[in-house]
Image (cartoon, rainbow, N blue to C red; front, top):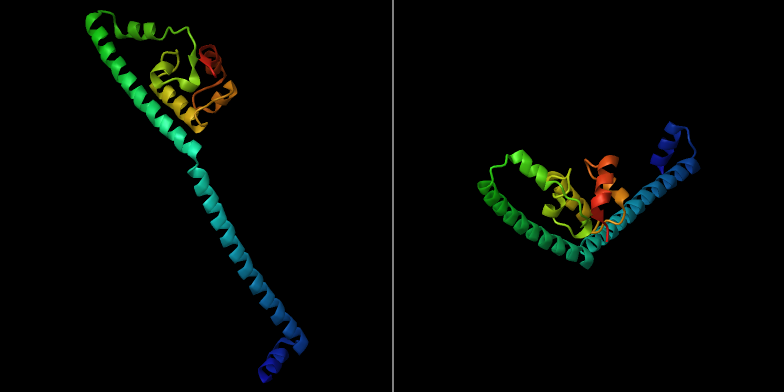
Length: 171
């Protein structure tokens, strides 16, 4: 008790005030401990939810489908490269004329099922843009439902969107 009296004298406080301050500090420390404990529990729950969402069957299935689609487009690209090389050897046309003839596509393509080679048939879409479009489709879960969503792809503005609307179907 002598220690408490000395402290009260130095701080110019009564014993009751010192007891109250000590009690308030104890509650403050206890509140901090409880808050930390709750945030740890919440973080643990959020991590478990994130892991569960990451491993959902639908996402795994779409990744498997995407990998299979990438393999088929690699095969298509390889076949097209071989046939393009053979046709280059047999024709005397300059390369500029061949690429111009290749880009005169007037049909429509089902975008949600199209491969990289099919996308490149459309004028204004090269290998890089086709890769971006396929990656964009994959980020949307393998399905794009509205043309306005294409504006999120780097390199697609309103003009290119109009071209894509002419050639894409979103079935």
